[in-house]
Length: 266
Image 1 (cartoon, rainbow, N blue to C red):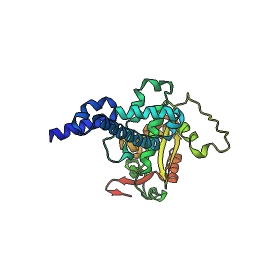
Image 2 (image 1 turned 90 degrees about the vertical axis):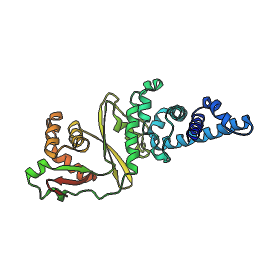
Image 3 (image 1 turned 120 degrees about the vertical axis):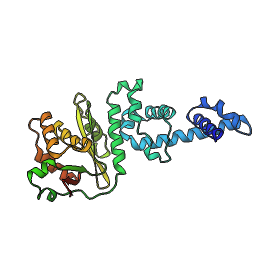
Image 4 (image 1 turned 45 degrees about the vertical axis):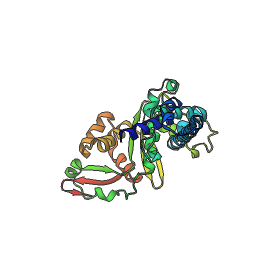
């Protein structure tokens, strides 16, 4: 078993880089040059599959960098972070972290956070179908019950804060954004932004939130805070935080899955 495991590791190393070939070639029978060529074919196919997976997950990053630069990023990422999952839809979850530490990308400082947003969008595309909660669920709750209630979000709902206008960058790089705009981008790169991601039927949506609204939903979705605690926290970030508008938006967009009250779920 250890011998097989060592052989598998050698093969994986040869797939990542030609530098791994010297360790692998002695384990193969037949002509060494032919085997070297076959390893090159396998390596090319592996990189091509990784490129297809990351292009699917990060189309905006590809638009921003250009095809050739993105292809080079994928090759570097593949060499450092090969796939460990048989499902390539799950490959690329560490791409943003790779971009954070890759010196040539520093000329595009917003790119790692754009990648983080794109991964959330990618994950949301395969989120489970579910029926969102309607406004009637709030009708029977008295103020005390509502204050201690915990809201649960629909699958695919995600939040991301950034020092960069990531929602605007993503939105202006969508296929339907160019209509009537002359393909010109109007983005203030000095603007920090809070983004929300969710599934709307078969489509994934992205929007920006105010700091208070983001704090409210982050406390609920990420921390598990009660409704009252999340409301109180939101007002510390945004003094005139509009709770009614936040709830109305959540119901209209289908963000809410159910409400958990003491001894009851709705």
